[in-house]
Amino acid sequence: MPAEYSLPQFVADLRSITAATADEREILRRIAPLAERLAANPGLPDAPAIHSNVEKGFSFNLLHEEPDRTLAVALLSWLPSGATLPHNHGTWGIVVGLAGAEKNIFWRRLDDGSRAGYAELERVGEMECILGQALVLPSPTIHSVENSTAEPSVSLHIYGKNVYYTGRSQFDIVNKRELPWGVKAS
Ligand SMILES: [Fe+2]
Image 1 (spheres, rainbow, N blue to C red):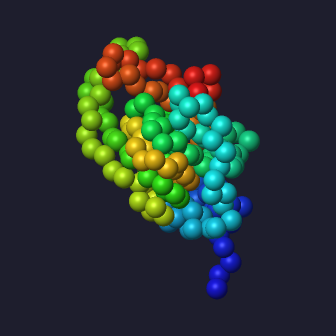
Image 2: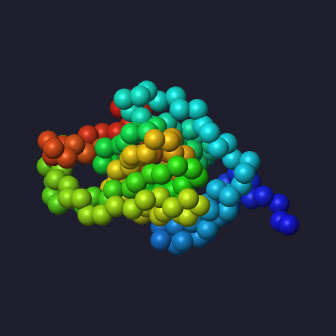
Protein backbone atom coordinates (compact mmCIF):
# COMPACT_ATOMS: atom_id res chain seq x y z
CA MET A 1 0.00 0.00 0.00
CA PRO A 2 1.69 3.22 -1.08
CA ALA A 3 2.00 6.01 1.45
CA GLU A 4 -0.50 8.83 1.22
CA TYR A 5 0.43 11.57 -1.22
CA SER A 6 1.19 14.50 1.05
CA LEU A 7 0.99 18.26 0.67
CA PRO A 8 4.84 18.62 0.75
CA GLN A 9 5.14 15.99 -2.00
CA PHE A 10 2.48 17.79 -4.04
CA VAL A 11 4.26 21.13 -3.63
CA ALA A 12 7.56 19.54 -4.72
CA ASP A 13 5.80 18.22 -7.83
CA LEU A 14 4.22 21.63 -8.51
CA ARG A 15 7.71 23.14 -8.42
CA SER A 16 9.26 20.61 -10.77
CA ILE A 17 6.36 20.70 -13.25
CA THR A 18 6.27 24.51 -13.47
CA ALA A 19 10.08 24.62 -13.69
CA ALA A 20 9.99 22.17 -16.60
CA THR A 21 7.44 23.97 -18.76
CA ALA A 22 5.70 27.32 -19.12
CA ASP A 23 2.98 25.80 -21.31
CA GLU A 24 -0.22 26.26 -19.30
CA ARG A 25 -2.06 23.39 -20.98
CA GLU A 26 0.80 21.06 -20.15
CA ILE A 27 0.97 22.35 -16.57
CA LEU A 28 -2.77 21.76 -16.09
CA ARG A 29 -2.61 18.33 -17.74
CA ARG A 30 0.19 17.21 -15.44
CA ILE A 31 -1.06 18.74 -12.19
CA ALA A 32 -4.73 17.66 -12.47
CA PRO A 33 -4.16 13.96 -11.60
CA LEU A 34 -1.79 14.93 -8.78
CA ALA A 35 -4.43 17.29 -7.36
CA GLU A 36 -6.84 14.33 -7.34
CA ARG A 37 -4.24 12.24 -5.47
CA LEU A 38 -3.77 14.98 -2.89
CA ALA A 39 -7.55 15.34 -2.52
CA ALA A 40 -7.71 11.63 -1.70
CA ASN A 41 -5.36 12.10 1.28
CA PRO A 42 -7.53 11.76 4.39
CA GLY A 43 -4.94 13.82 6.29
CA LEU A 44 -6.13 16.98 4.57
CA PRO A 45 -8.26 19.07 6.91
CA ASP A 46 -11.82 18.19 5.98
CA ALA A 47 -13.67 20.94 7.78
CA PRO A 48 -11.85 24.25 7.44
CA ALA A 49 -13.06 27.03 9.66
CA ILE A 50 -15.57 29.17 7.86
CA HIS A 51 -14.25 32.53 8.89
CA SER A 52 -15.96 34.51 6.19
CA ASN A 53 -18.97 36.58 7.00
CA VAL A 54 -22.41 35.24 6.21
CA GLU A 55 -22.92 37.85 3.51
CA LYS A 56 -19.93 36.58 1.56
CA GLY A 57 -20.77 32.97 2.30
CA PHE A 58 -17.42 31.34 1.63
CA SER A 59 -13.95 31.05 3.12
CA PHE A 60 -10.45 30.81 1.64
CA ASN A 61 -7.97 28.81 3.74
CA LEU A 62 -4.45 28.93 2.35
CA LEU A 63 -2.40 25.72 2.81
CA HIS A 64 0.66 26.77 0.81
CA GLU A 65 2.13 29.47 -1.40
CA GLU A 66 5.69 30.21 -2.50
CA PRO A 67 7.39 33.39 -1.18
CA ASP A 68 6.35 35.18 -4.41
CA ARG A 69 2.76 33.92 -3.87
CA THR A 70 2.91 31.50 -6.83
CA LEU A 71 1.77 27.85 -6.55
CA ALA A 72 -1.05 28.58 -4.11
CA VAL A 73 -2.90 25.62 -2.56
CA ALA A 74 -6.05 26.37 -0.59
CA LEU A 75 -9.16 24.80 0.85
CA LEU A 76 -12.32 26.73 0.12
CA SER A 77 -15.67 26.24 1.75
CA TRP A 78 -19.05 27.57 0.77
CA LEU A 79 -21.86 27.91 3.28
CA PRO A 80 -25.38 26.87 2.28
CA SER A 81 -26.57 29.56 -0.13
CA GLY A 82 -23.01 30.92 -0.40
CA ALA A 83 -22.01 32.19 -3.82
CA THR A 84 -19.47 34.29 -5.66
CA LEU A 85 -20.06 36.84 -8.36
CA PRO A 86 -18.76 35.86 -11.79
CA HIS A 87 -14.98 36.33 -11.68
CA ASN A 88 -11.72 35.51 -13.39
CA HIS A 89 -8.54 34.46 -11.59
CA GLY A 90 -5.68 36.13 -13.46
CA THR A 91 -3.96 32.73 -13.42
CA TRP A 92 -4.68 29.05 -14.06
CA GLY A 93 -6.60 27.02 -11.52
CA ILE A 94 -7.61 23.46 -10.64
CA VAL A 95 -10.49 22.60 -8.29
CA VAL A 96 -11.26 19.23 -6.71
CA GLY A 97 -14.46 18.79 -4.69
CA LEU A 98 -13.94 17.21 -1.26
CA ALA A 99 -17.39 17.45 0.32
CA GLY A 100 -20.83 18.80 -0.43
CA ALA A 101 -21.97 20.34 -3.71
CA GLU A 102 -20.60 23.31 -5.63
CA LYS A 103 -22.05 24.45 -8.89
CA ASN A 104 -19.71 26.18 -11.34
CA ILE A 105 -21.41 28.54 -13.77
CA PHE A 106 -19.33 29.56 -16.77
CA TRP A 107 -19.47 32.93 -18.50
CA ARG A 108 -18.19 34.36 -21.76
CA ARG A 109 -17.21 37.97 -22.24
CA LEU A 110 -19.01 39.68 -25.11
CA ASP A 111 -17.26 43.07 -25.13
CA ASP A 112 -13.63 43.55 -26.16
CA GLY A 113 -12.47 44.82 -22.76
CA SER A 114 -11.39 48.17 -24.19
CA ARG A 115 -13.73 50.29 -22.02
CA ALA A 116 -12.34 50.61 -18.47
CA GLY A 117 -14.73 49.20 -15.89
CA TYR A 118 -17.24 47.97 -18.50
CA ALA A 119 -17.93 44.31 -19.13
CA GLU A 120 -20.77 42.44 -20.79
CA LEU A 121 -21.02 38.74 -19.97
CA GLU A 122 -23.11 35.88 -21.30
CA ARG A 123 -23.82 32.70 -19.33
CA VAL A 124 -22.58 29.75 -21.38
CA GLY A 125 -22.93 26.70 -19.16
CA GLU A 126 -22.76 25.13 -15.74
CA MET A 127 -21.29 22.07 -14.11
CA GLU A 128 -21.58 20.47 -10.68
CA CYS A 129 -18.23 19.78 -9.02
CA ILE A 130 -17.77 16.00 -8.95
CA LEU A 131 -16.18 14.88 -5.69
CA GLY A 132 -12.60 13.74 -6.21
CA GLN A 133 -12.42 14.88 -9.83
CA ALA A 134 -10.25 17.78 -10.95
CA LEU A 135 -11.96 20.67 -12.71
CA VAL A 136 -9.40 22.55 -14.80
CA LEU A 137 -9.76 26.33 -15.13
CA PRO A 138 -7.44 27.82 -17.77
CA SER A 139 -6.43 31.47 -17.23
CA PRO A 140 -9.15 33.04 -19.42
CA THR A 141 -11.96 31.26 -17.49
CA ILE A 142 -14.75 33.38 -16.04
CA HIS A 143 -16.97 31.48 -13.62
CA SER A 144 -19.16 31.88 -10.57
CA VAL A 145 -19.61 29.32 -7.81
CA GLU A 146 -22.66 28.64 -5.69
CA ASN A 147 -23.72 26.14 -3.07
CA SER A 148 -27.47 25.77 -3.31
CA THR A 149 -27.64 22.86 -0.86
CA ALA A 150 -28.26 22.82 2.91
CA GLU A 151 -24.70 21.60 3.75
CA PRO A 152 -21.38 23.45 3.58
CA SER A 153 -19.10 22.44 0.72
CA VAL A 154 -15.32 21.99 0.80
CA SER A 155 -12.98 21.96 -2.18
CA LEU A 156 -9.25 21.90 -2.86
CA HIS A 157 -7.96 24.69 -5.10
CA ILE A 158 -4.58 25.08 -6.76
CA TYR A 159 -3.67 28.31 -8.54
CA GLY A 160 -0.64 29.47 -10.50
CA LYS A 161 -0.59 32.37 -8.06
CA ASN A 162 -2.59 33.28 -4.94
CA VAL A 163 -5.68 34.81 -6.53
CA TYR A 164 -5.81 37.72 -4.09
CA TYR A 165 -2.60 38.99 -5.74
CA THR A 166 -3.22 38.41 -9.44
CA GLY A 167 -5.26 41.51 -10.27
CA ARG A 168 -8.35 39.40 -10.91
CA SER A 169 -11.80 40.88 -11.47
CA GLN A 170 -15.38 40.31 -10.37
CA PHE A 171 -18.26 41.13 -12.68
CA ASP A 172 -21.56 42.84 -11.97
CA ILE A 173 -23.78 41.31 -14.64
CA VAL A 174 -26.77 43.61 -14.11
CA ASN A 175 -24.83 46.87 -14.28
CA LYS A 176 -22.25 45.52 -16.76
CA ARG A 177 -19.31 46.43 -14.56
CA GLU A 178 -15.85 44.89 -14.15
CA LEU A 179 -14.67 45.34 -10.54
CA PRO A 180 -11.19 44.71 -9.10
CA TRP A 181 -11.16 41.73 -6.68
CA GLY A 182 -7.97 41.91 -4.65
CA VAL A 183 -7.13 41.67 -0.98
CA LYS A 184 -9.00 44.85 -0.01
CA ALA A 185 -12.18 43.86 -1.81
CA SER A 186 -12.21 40.34 -0.38
FE1 LIG B 1 -13.02 31.04 -8.94
